[in-house]
Image 1 (cartoon, rainbow, N blue to C red):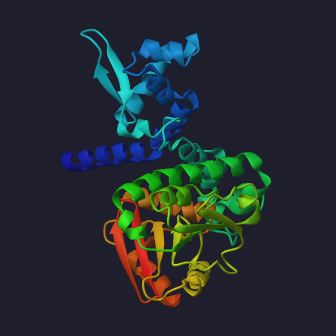
Image 2 (image 1 turned 180 degrees about the horizontal axis):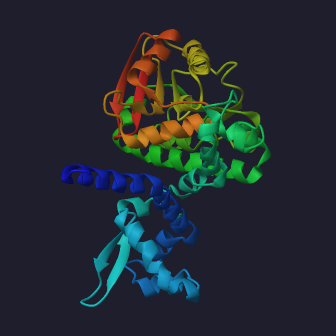
Image 3 (image 1 turned 180 degrees about the vertical axis):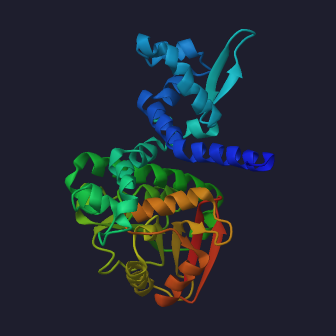
Length: 349
C-alpha cells in the first residue's frame, strides 16, 4: 500500500504528465487566434471588446458561440490576451505585449513568423522523431515529406516558400527595430556592411536608414534576390555563401548558422573571415541563440528541437560557438544578451 507522501507524488506526476501531453493545445489555440485574426479585430476596435462583440465581429458561427469563451479563456491564461473590466457587469479582452506582435498592420508584426512555425509542414514532421532516431535518414522533415529536405520542400512549395520569406521578413523587421534603437553602436563606423542570407533585405534596409553613409550589400540565392530592387545604399547580390561572399568591413548573419551543422558553419564563417576587408576593426556580427549550458531556457530547447527536426541544424552553447570561431580562424568574440533567448555575437579576426 502506498504511503500518503507517495500518493501525493503520484498525483503531482500525473498532473505534470497531463501538462506535457497537452502542451500542444496552447500552440494550436494560438494558431486558431491567428486564423480568426483576433488581435487584428481588437486592434481595429481600438479598445477592450466583450466576448459577444468579438464573436459578432470575427464572426464566429452561431453554433460555436457557446464554445468561444473556452478558447479565449486559454488564450488569456497563456497571456496572449488580457481580461479587463469594461463596466460593473462585463469583462473585455484587450492586448497583451504578445498580442501586439500578432497585429498584421503593426510595424513589428510577427504574424507570418508565428503562422509559418505552426504550419503543418513543420508541425507534422515532429511526429517522426522517434522513428528518425532508429533510422539513418537525414531528418524527421525528410521522412514526412517524401525524401525532401526543408530547403528542397520550400523550393517546390510556392505557398510555403512565400510564407517562410514573409516570416523571415517579420523577424528581420523586429530585430531591425531593436538593433537600431538600443544597439546601434555595434554597427557604427563601417564603410561597407554585408548581410549574408539577408533575403529581401529587410534587416539591411532597417540598419541602412540609420547609417546612410554606409553601403550595404545583401547576399542571397539567385531566386531570392531576383526581384529585389537596389536603393541608394543597399545593393543585392546573387550568390552562394558556401562558395564565397563579397568583401565588406562588417558582415551580419541573422538566424543563418543555426540552420547548418558544424562543418557547414565553419565553411560559411571561413568565407566571411576571408571577405573581411580589414583585420583591424572588421568583424562578423551574428544574431542567434546562445544556449546556457547549465540552465538552458526552455524556449531555446524547443528551438533546438525545431532545428533538429527540420533543417539538420542546432542551437549552440557558448562553448560550441567558440569551437566554430576557432576552427574558422577567428581570434576572439563578444556575446551581448538581448533577451533570455536571443544574443548578438561579435566575432573578430
